[in-house]
Image: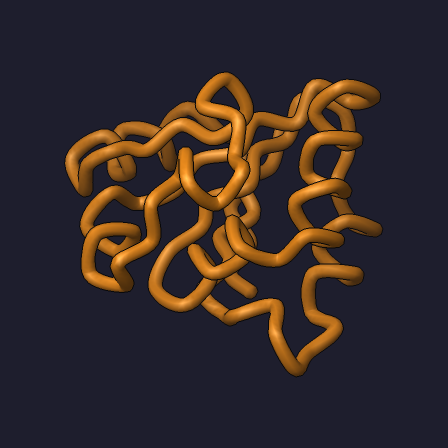
Length: 104
């Protein structure tokens, strides 16, 4: 179980393709910093949903970064059951729940 920590916006980069290719069953994806813009990217969001259904990939977003970027999970079309906004403290605990982390 690996936690993929993504801090880069999906706009203007193909980084998320690499993230999705490296995901295995029951991995997690944590969106931080500009990575939270993935919630507004139609194709990336579609792929997150598909990975959740097919591999059980959990997706998290750092609440402070969502707020700082005026990104509203619900208005972005994001499903609150798919994306879980968490605090910095929860993020620290989350890193301990996974065997490994990869920062993208």
